[in-house]
Every structure is written in C-alpha cells, then in structure tokens.
Image 1 (cartoon, rainbow, N blue to C red):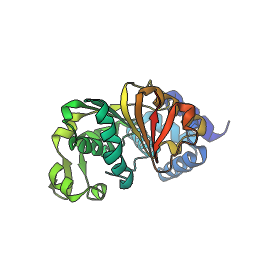
Image 2: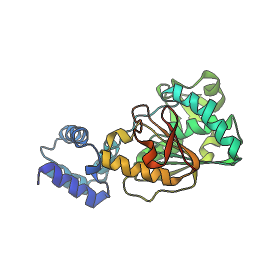
Image 3: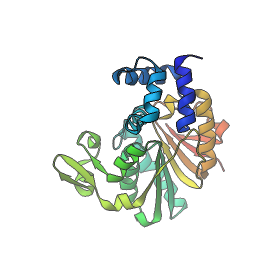
Image 4: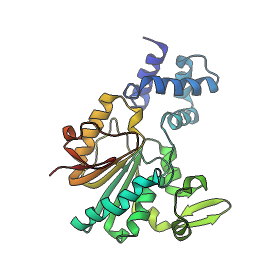
Amino acid sequence: MSDYQAFVKSIKKKTGIDLNLYKEVQMKRRLTSLRDKKGFKDFSSYFNALASDQELLSEFLDKMTINVSEFYRNSARWQVLEKKILPDLLKKQSHLKVWSAACSTGDEPYTIAMMLSEHIDLSKVSILATDIDDKILERAQKGIYTERALKEVPKSLKDKYFKYENSLYTIDDRFKKAITFKKHNLLSDPYPSGFDLIVCRNVLIYFTEEAKTEIYHKFSRSLNNNGVFFVGSTEQIFSPESYNFRVLDTFFYQKND
C-alpha cells in the first residue's frame, strides 16, 4: 500500500471521510501541497501529527473541502431560478422547503433566502444549509462577508439586506433566522427528504463518477415529485432520466411525477 493510500485509509478511520470518493489526482495534489507547506515529508508523519493536533486536523478538513463561494455565483443561472423556476414552484404550493447542500460560507443559502423574500414571506420557507466543515458552518452562521463575495449582488439588494461596517457586510438577521445550518457529509450521511428545491453547485466535479451517480440518486429521492435540482455550470447531468429527472432548463432538473 502506498504512503498516500495508507493515509486515505487512516483518515477514513479517524474522520469517516472517504478520500477515495474524490478524484485522486486533484485531491492528492491538493493534500501534498498542504502537507509540504506544513513541513512533513510523507503522509505517514503528516497523519500522526493530524491525529494529535486538533488545530492541524481542522485546517486539513478546511483545505480538503472546496470553499470557493460568492453570492449569485454565475448570476445568469440565478436569474433563471428567480424568473422561471421559483414562480413555477410557488404556483403549486404556498410553503417551500429548500436544501442548499455543500453550502460553504453561506453565500448560496443567503442568496436563496434573499431571492425568496422578494416573492413570499420567509415564515413560509424552510431552508436547510449543510456542509462537511464545522469551521465553515460557523462562518456561515455569522453572515459576515467581504466586498468580493458580494460583487454580483445588485446594489439595491446590497443596500436593503446588508449592514456595512469596517469594510465588511453583515446580512440582515431575518435571513439568519430563515436558515438552519447543519453538518452533513454528502458521501456518507443519510439524506433528508421532502424538498421542493435542492441546490448543490460546483462541488460534485471533485467526486468520482461512481460517487456522483450515488449522490444523484440520493438527491432524486430527497426531492418531492416535480421538485427541482439546481447544479453548477460545469456539472451537467448527461443521463438525467436514469435519476428520474428531466431537463427543465440549463443546469436545472425536475423530478418526474
């Protein structure tokens, strides 16, 4: 067994995270860079340090996950969600249950909450936001962002929904109250169900094809009939019918009745 594979096995035993389900070339490169930066010459000595140093382990988990996020990322797709998808969903029900999976620093679920607040009272909305990283979820719950994260947010919404102070933007408390943040591992934890909309963007590209197939099946089971699955702009599903999906729009899939 190689040094890296032994590390993968040890990490799974310690954290429950199976690195084999991520694309090996990308993950190995990312973790080798982190290991070298921390001054370890091999994965064996790096794991021994992780096992005894909680701060080092937290940093490893943070770097292992892909925390690149911003409000209204790929804004043209969000416009489709707001102008086409949400109005159709809201025609069919007065309450909406949404899951922002792999939500990172919270930009995505807050974007959804802001968008929905323009169409429906937030008391009629349930938004679950999940991620594998505890530290990232803590940041998300605070709802504090830099100018860069808000570059795609229309000025009217920025002025309306954020408080600006000391070069940072804090989101309105009503959006924090509308979202439940929770730790969840897409690869191993049970999936919640009964959702009208699931958003999972720019994460699945890092997983193997086998892992993606399993995740798509689980997301499909988590959706209500006619519920919508919104993926990232590099994550087109090539055989949606095998997951009981049909193409609703580019990067939007609807679960069949």
